[in-house]
Length: 172
Image (cartoon, rainbow, N blue to C red; front, side):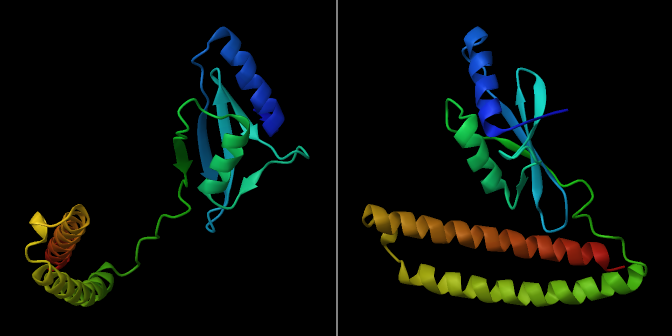
């Protein structure tokens, strides 16, 4: 696979757009360690290139945002939207526990603590909603705020349901 600097990638896309005006690049990053540092790849005209720094070394990125900035400065898209595929392979995969029974028991306890915390969040949301009585017919900002808090309430209720389902799955 060829390694290309930002200037080379810019030239390649410019050349590709001469024959195909709607040509665009695609982007992907691969994690190289558990700290989520990445190397980037840019595909132009069906050929994938490894992103390089101006000194020719493989460019590494501390986060996906840094890679998007790299791409935007050399291979800008017509829409300004940069869909990036992220490949972490097995770097973030957890190892299976050696004692599944003990792990499941610990997990049930941990989830119980989390559920109690989520119930507290739900109580706070309910108190906020009680103070927002009549906001559904208030000004635009009041309506938007009430809708946002109601969406939070729905998400937290869903999280509690997911916790309950996981506890049921782990409890023999």
